[in-house]
Length: 85
Image (cartoon, rainbow, N blue to C red; front, side, top):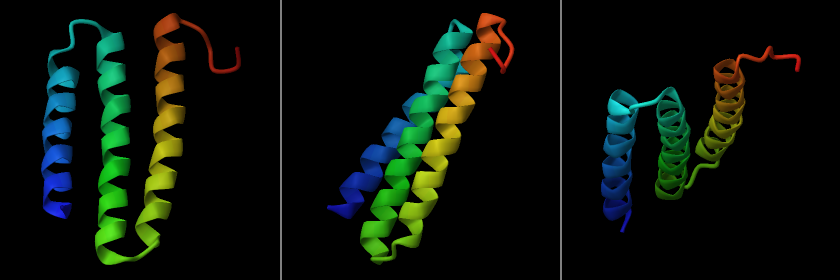
């Protein structure tokens, strides 16, 4: 079961990287990086289940927060607005 989860996550990671590399618009690339962050959180969750250590869940939580902040910052940059608006 864990191997199947790893396989699905690797396929999702490859598809996200393809979207980031070939996205026709910058918005598509931002969405690809955001989904890639979600996939990395999934990897952290699967590793936490496999090793039975909660440390990986903390890494996933931190990654999710940083990914969200990065996505919001990139979206504001594409709109041409400053970070204080």
